[in-house]
Image 1 (spheres, rainbow, N blue to C red):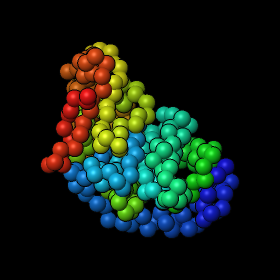
Image 2 (cartoon, one colour):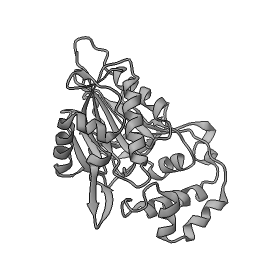
Image 3 (tube, rainbow, N blue to C red):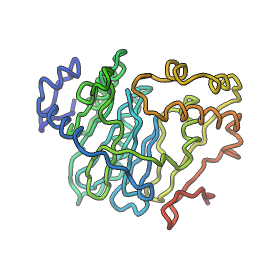
Length: 308
């Protein structure tokens, strides 16, 4: 069980409360992290990670300087970084397949850290969740910790701003204190962040997740190319029902945490549904079953390109 805190292998905690009681410095680290100013990240240096996506890169990447993700309520943002190579992987985990996702995240970093001249260790940063009524956050926190304990590599838990240590009260309601994080790939700095731009292909990527797509690696750091799909969905006119519903109904039935979602949640859901209605078959989005590829332009935007 090679999950380590301060270089000591930890026992599997029975609860997050138990974890923070045993390792009080994690509480202090979480408080410090939560108190940091939120950085509004420039889209021209960013690769944004949506729910059920992950991406990995290294400091040698000329297309991406920051990996980032936000809008996490019960979801957890999982970051693994190799201190020698500087390779990092960020994932946005919602608990759908935690046990199979964690090995993918670790492998994404180790596969970019094979230079023996760059010795180092794997550091883990966990951010997300809050003290939600259904205890969805607690369950995901424990499953992630357990899954990392099962990896063969030594993994050092550095930041653990999760569940009750990421919980704040706003007008009597529990909410996550930190919704989003970024990592500066060049320096390794991890920070609370927000992202006005969530592309490329924001609606397509949201549609993939909305229709049941599993965790996907969206980036080839060697080529500097974002790759989306191909994925499959079938026409479903019934979803048009949601477009006529009020905000409270959509929050109640389509969110794991209705009282804690960001203000744009409902519009995001409606935009995703509208995209699926306009593209009732995935074949129209992935002609010939080929993925969509995006490359950074000299101006810093992501451009759809034909991959040769």
